[in-house]
Length: 213
Image (cartoon, rainbow, N blue to C red):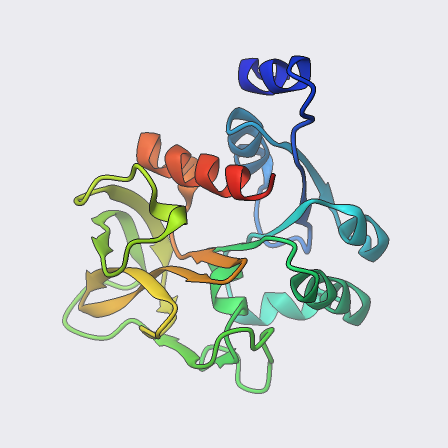
């Protein structure tokens, strides 16, 4: 248990229980550690009933959009039901793309359609995949960005990205601008890996955890 988690427990406020959806799309160890350090009580699960009991849900992931087909109908329904109850939801990397309608990477595979639009291959005279550090370009002020500097650097590894939409609160440019962070009600998403993005990434995780209380 982290120092922050111990302090909040001693204050009589239990840390929020955050379910990380396990659909075998990446190593989740660093994300679990990051959320715990941010003051949450994270657990990894693929069980729909466990998702229904969580204070918040995180959909992580790396790789091809087709990997999301491993999220079975019951789990998908549990995520959507949680959103209807205003349970906070955070998509990370592939998880952010899963918030949208679909992706040209895997035609016929549907996302959650919580945000409208199709994810597409990064375009322009740039190297793909986009791997490494890049700048967040703030588009709107939003709670998920509280305390994050104007020129924050975060860590990416991806070839496809979501379009810039009304819910986009920050972009990054690699060839052309793409959605880096979305915030739509209690639905959040980041294209980068906050758990690997230093203090700015941890600030974003702490902001999300605070929004779960």
